[in-house]
Length: 95
Image 1 (cartoon, helix red, strand yellow):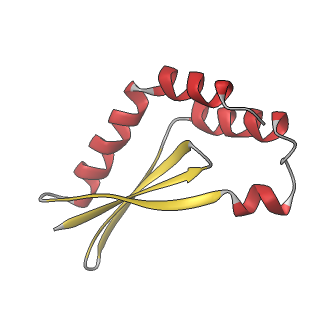
Image 2: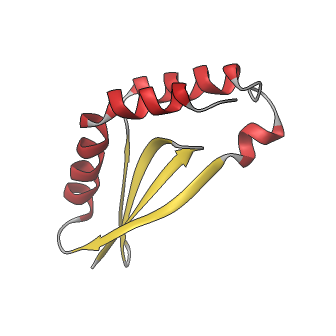
């Protein structure tokens, strides 16, 4: 069973990790997510601070049957499809 984990900065996703024993995969989301993270860190006054580093989180998603790379890519694709909603929610969140 593959365990999927979301790596995010505050509420903004950055990467999907998949693990099944020794088999592992990581899929970074597109550059627009990192650009959004950078923009929001600057707006919230956290760029270059310890608080910025402390805002990174790992959150378990689900466990599924299949290959690590395929499942990580599928999960990443789901977040990519929701980018505009994620961006709008991040911008609407107060500093």
